[in-house]
Image 1 (cartoon, one colour):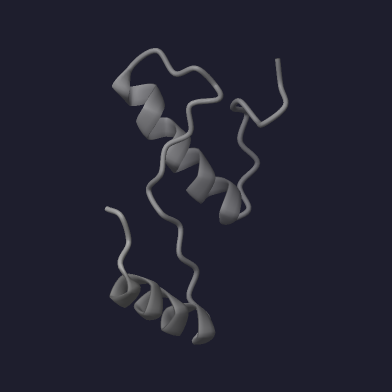
Image 2 (cartoon, helix red, strand yellow):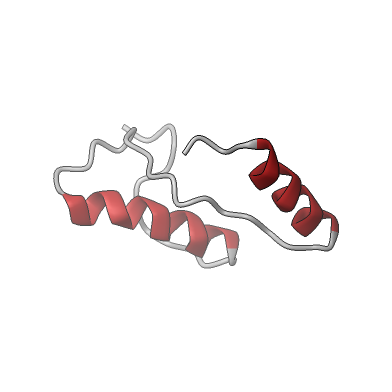
Length: 62
């Protein structure tokens, strides 16, 4: 971190060939209380991208 130009060019080539890049960047808008909840934010993003309907915090929920 941060990504350098080589990383970005490699990701560009992967995307052009059809790959999906999902960086392991946790989100904190759900106010996680421990490391496991932080990890869950990354897992949730992957599951949502794969089409699973999960019952977790979603952006805009109170």
